[in-house]
Length: 82
Image 1: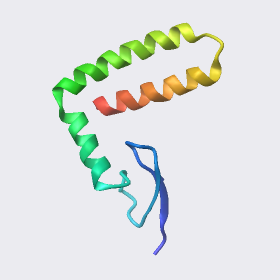
Image 2: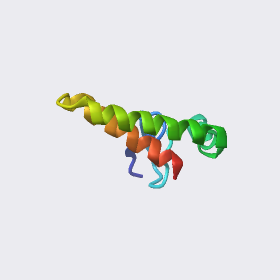
Image 3: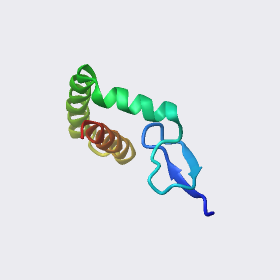
């Protein structure tokens, strides 16, 4: 069997798997993701974090590396709200 190298959607850690549809490196990451996603209290705090990040991105200006990092974080938070 071929092992695939993938990145965990929650922690970003690289892991190897035989399954194409596996997106978390462990049961702990999978459970943590679902706890975050389906908690309405966390959805409110995620929306607040998104607003703060959007403001930071507007004011970052020329610092390209920092801006890219903030955009990645913003994409991740938006993905959590899906």
